Length: 326
Image 1: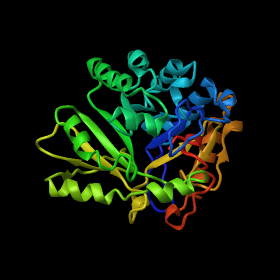
Image 2: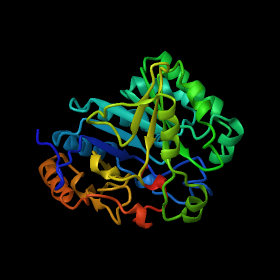
Image 3: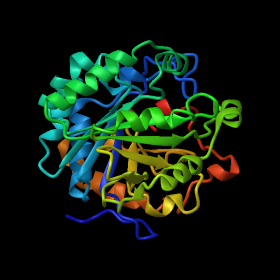
């Protein structure tokens, strides 16, 4: 096994794989008008996904996160999970979901090999949740989380996009929720994308405001695992759960980058906010191209910049987060 390493010496044991750009929610910070166009029908096939994941496993990837759009909208989703979980080197198979019908589906995902779960919950207030997502499904999602715990998941991460005047007052509500449950709530700073400039300017709030409140209340910063995402995670002896902060506008945010991305069309994205991706799909058509695929991934990684340029308002080709899975 040869580990992937870029020019800055960063290693990449973590792949985020989007399996569709289709989404059925209307989150205000992503697809406020719904998913008007998608390439869902031409997404990577199961054999293509197997070859891709196998190549990354050969290069040291041990964690793959399946994202969308909403990945569970694929009719072959459970088969997709089995395909990846059957690769011995992949130790962590995670799913990021909006939680749609999760109460009815979560057990089958676990049976298919998923062993980590991220659920998007932007508010614990039903009316605000509905306002943000366009769906009145908070109870259904919370029930799905309970069922996940009942069926063996030891911890769950919840993603909450922090928005000024909408949910930035809910810290105490989230803290009460995780008091006795092994849930990590990750407050994610609102990020500017090509379609959301005005929304970003109106609702962005720094995660540092939450960080200050946590420190004042005795929360302590945890050491970061090698395959962890970019969150700063905080724990407290009186709480079973944790709080994470993802602050892409903070200094040196990219210094610990350890993740790579592939879109549902097979484009290798060196950053969430890259100007363009590099197609790998022509090398996914048969098993005989694995060596060429591995060499291509290595070569492309040399092009990765040392940082993104969000602080300059440069959002690359990412019009919305559903395009690539956030």
